[in-house]
Length: 314
Length: 287
Image 1 (cartoon, helix red, strand yellow):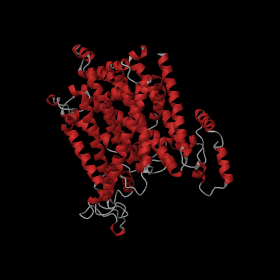
Image 2: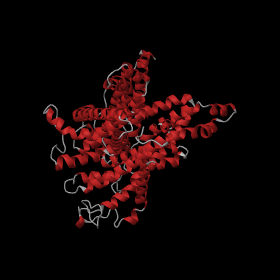
Image 3: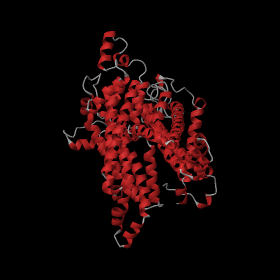
Image 4: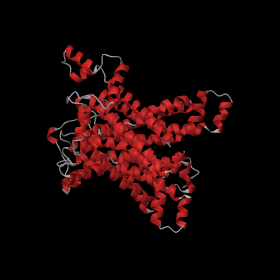
């Protein structure tokens, strides 16, 4: 078991190193000199030289990478050219709406996806199953931002049930936070729910055919208990993996959803930084998201230990 | 895994023909075919160019003169939707082709030479840890808004996903007796890879390529919606939705039509993908 944990930790460190190299080279692929992109055409040679020194651009590429990556490991993501503050601080200021949106939409996705998937598997090859699978197919195909726009048109503009856009901090009014997040979380969670529902259904269908389910039934256990305690628990391993992987999609979807609903979160910060060509912020945000993703997937893999004894003794 | 299973009487058909007989695949093929025709025939089925500004005809609702209405600059939405299909389909097809060909080649080489496998897989894991949208935004921010750059960025996003699928297939095929036999007969590595392993590993790659097509169309639209995709003079469904967003109350047609066409296209490709997967997977065929 310790070997398993150590191996997973090692592969996470390796993955983060690769992520660092990729992100570093993306920013270094900016055509021409990055200083002219940052300072504009009218910068004086002295200004350019000062910036080159500050960014370590006068050193060889491997030295630049290790200077930067060393900082990343210590939690220093550099500083924003535009906002003139550390990237970590800039992201921290905008992180609350993003985290809330990601949590809410994951909640929507898991609740909706699991229940739809289980229902479709129990009612395999019936009308219910077909309808659920059609809804899941729509979830995979409708763009999050279009779904969001249609929801605004219906629930905010026409019916006026919910606020069209914006965000209220949970420190000010938790109730308003929820009201403002209902539509964004549904829009973003729907596509994830579709992925989870498809995986849950497939996995449940496999698990319902297993001998231990037949044994549980023949013991005379009530059907809900057979489904939830025996079949679903076993079907959860691949579903958990999909939920872990969907963190990446949620993190990407946050950028789009925050734009649609004018939520002043870290996703918006990334888009604003693209427009300002503020590369350290883009770089920092991408690294931070990759770290969260790698961490969540590490936790998912470790949760197998609790769910499946076979992994524990392997 | 799909809701619709193949009747047993169709089993003798060749998979590529049988799959079209499924209603969902037929729907997908017809819809995608219509989109392709619209994209190719755009100059002949529209009356004005996609970038033609008409200040007097601003925000006109759908009518016989403007099938889908006009936007705030008086540009014809039908014309922009038709030309937008060119961008979406070009990006989708090119990304699917490039990422699956490169991904398969990478998988063949790394799946065959085990010493290379570990290194390649770590690099792919690193790429996969980056959310597609963010990775694409970062690349586009660095190399600038051009259609070829979108294809480059999206191919890089989907390359690891294709390579993983192809690798899994290569690992299975590699263990087959006929590969061992070819090896024993003294066939060269390259010949074994291309003539013996590749054909056996192609099926899952083909299915994956359709999903890449669908998600690449979605991702291009997302990038353009965020202003990090197509350049301003190239009509894009995503960019149209971004422009229409601000005028949603006065002119909902700016939001509804491009979004509906985009969704329909992605739905069509996904349906083809599901149908192909069900038809080509022997396990599912039995069910």
